[in-house]
Amino acid sequence: MPAPLPAPARLTTQDAVDQHLRQLIELDPRLRPVRAAVGDVPLRARPAGFAGLARVICGQQVSVASADAIWRRLEALPGATTPDGFLALGERGLQGVGLSRSKFQGLTVLANALAAGELDLPAIEAMPTEAAIAALTRYKGVGPWTAEIYLMFCAGHPDIFPAGDIALQKAVGDALTPGQTPDRPRLIAMAAEWSPYRAAAALLFWRFYRVTRQRDGVGL
Image 1 (spheres, rainbow, N blue to C red):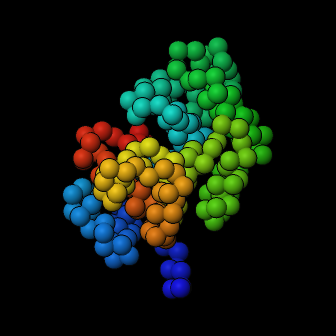
Image 2 (image 1 turned 90 degrees about the vertical axis):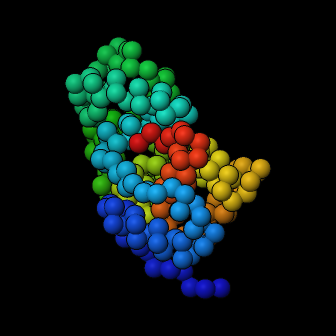
């Protein structure tokens, strides 16, 4: 068995994305046609903190268009993207934003934890990936997909592939297993071959989904 590759730099610059994609294609030449089909693969980094988590949670289990609409309404409320401001608004002040009951409850738990100093996001972001996912998913409303998306887009973790993401499942199926859409367990196994560049692979396949299906696969 070959030795694992060293951990690459975090995906915090476009240069890092481009470098990781080059390494990814060397690792798995099957992805060369996918890379050729998509053109540029943008970084799409987002700010960390409560606002970053809130934006990811807005996107849980809804279309990209719906997630964007919810986020725009939330962001328009003064203070709503800070823990203290969110808590001050409360459920009444957030009426009309479009947050489901479960999303409101999850964001309230996170806002309380951040305001109390119990949740230290910078410390979690600095952890190894699996430990960071475990630390985030301790909180109500933060499942594996939410933790993975947050760590990818807001902290630049380079070796994450959100295999539960429907758009990624469809894109990988279209590119590598035509006529078959891999489910989460199968996609986890497939993506293991792309370590330690799995986040670059996710960005590549989201872009492939956009190019081939003319739809955005993730709203961040």
